[in-house]
Length: 288
Image 1 (tube, rainbow, N blue to C red):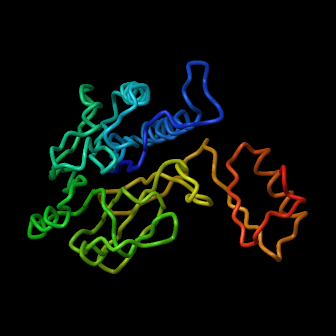
Image 2: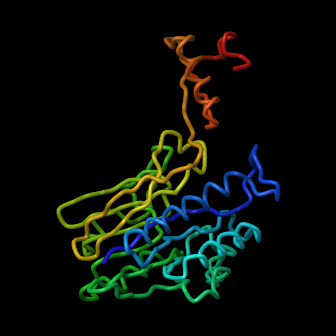
């Protein structure tokens, strides 16, 4: 059996330079298009389940009605698919543990299942443990460490030996070796697509389906296709979104090459991120 895994969708009416006639920003359309790509892939490959590993919402405590309506309408267009939607930190209403969540806004359609609390779910012959984001992630995990035959962990958390898109790691109290009980670990929370592979387990961050912020420059976004029989994971690149491209201006840079690269990025419609190690941008580049 196979299923699709994604995370960190971050729905909202993002500020943009392009909008539809009805006022929907292009960035939101790009997010929805990547979800449609996943759904179409699932249908074409006889896959029945799509798991969303948290952070459907972007702004904690505030949900965009328009964004959630469009997203929910998209899910309803695929009645043969079951969407398993897990709570992430951005889905919280507040910092309290009241467990109200933006993912509850997606409840109603028969093909949507939401996860606000830990739960074991059987997919064919495999047992998946869903651990939604909460303040006591470590305690929640410890409760299940002696549970037999838990094959796959699905959660929304940070690991100290994983990396943010900025390239830094954060001490979280959890490392990859703490999860070696599981044959496969699928995580949301960090937008940078990455994996930590060891002899005992395989850990994957799907990453966000499109480039959300500037520090994600250069990242190739994706979704994952997981085989519960072999624990193999296939990475499929998402399509149709504008990427962030970083251009470095330093003392040794070739101005002509830099100008050409900037023009190519601007002509493509992608985002340009300029970084400099010099005090001032060369006058030849001003206005480009």
